[in-house]
Amino acid sequence: MPQASTKPTASSRDIGMDLGTANTLVYARGHGIVLNEPSVVAVRAGTVTAVAVGAEAKETIGRTPGSITAIRPLKDGVICDYEAAEEMIRHFVRKAVPGRRARSRTRMVICVPSGVTPVERRAIVQASTRAGARAVHLIEEPMAAAIGAGLPVDEPRGSMVVDIGGGTCEVAVISLGGIVTSRSLRVGGDRMDTAITDHVRKEHGLLIGERTAEDVKVAIGSAWPVPDRPELENRSFTVRGRERVGGMPQTLQLTSADVRAALDEPVQAIIAAVRATLEECPPELSGDVMEHGIVLTGGGALLPGLDLRIASATGIPVFVADDPLDCVVLGTGKCVENMDSLF
Ligand code: ADP
Ligand code: MG
Image (tube, rainbow, N blue to C red; front, side, top):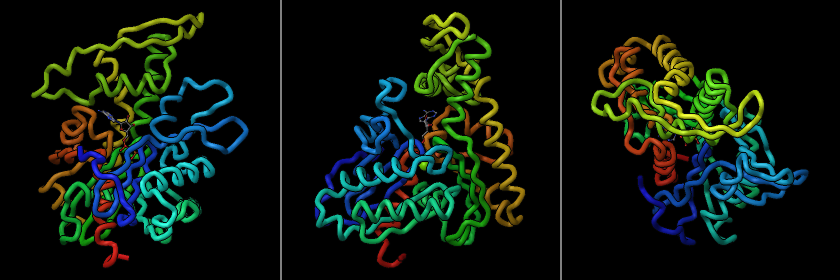
């Protein structure tokens, strides 16, 4: 994954931001990715003052004393807390472009989930302007994902991208620089985590937290057997939780089979969205997708076997993009690099 190597200087005023429900990444013109942090804000109860933002704030999830709450300002692909969102954007812009003078010349391209409403779009633009940016442009997430994944978006050829983030899954067919058909569903990594929490509660009578569920998913989760990686089967992971009855702390060994069963429902929902998008797509373009395949981006694309599972359900080849977590910010970055001609 391209590292946040160079620090932005006063000359790199233009930035691109992937405002994700799980992670926010910033690309500085001429420098590459300069920031990559969880989209989390910790605030003191009853105030809007952030005590921590990003990586530091994520550490507090599920562990906060009553006086501090960890907020994810974007949930399910929409802004659920405006004030926290604004605070977070301001914090990240200041971190990526130090110096008020440099910021006053900063132009920004922000990529937002396509489910975001016009009111929310305005709120994001406003928050970025208040953070000091001079001009703010918004772009559609599936387009950024496709550009970042290296798909030939400007050609008269249908390309399908499926971006699976924390809160949403965005499926789109792109041709000639535009989105021909798309859909956004509120199923992503978070729903996979909830599916694991629910499964463990129902099948094993144990209550576990969302951070634990995410750890389980990343450690032993999969959607389908991967022939080249038999070691992924028959793995186990020990979780700690609280007994549903009795309330005592308890540990439990979860297996990869357990987790695959738990993930079945969200995975099915993603497959249904892919199918529906293909059905809506003009036949020439769906023919292109049949021939060239579907590209997966976003953190959810890292779930082992998800590509094979979608391929088996649709009969279409599926590829995971290189560095799926970075595709959206890299695509946004490409727009930043070409901003003088684009906007
Ligand atoms: P967003 O764009 O919404 O910020 P990302 O594209 O950054 O989301 O992806 C974050 C999601 O990807 C989280 O739900 C995270 O748990 C999930 N994720 C990260 N790594 C893996 C992995 N190896 N397997 C499955 N899911 C993963
Ligand atoms: Mg994303």
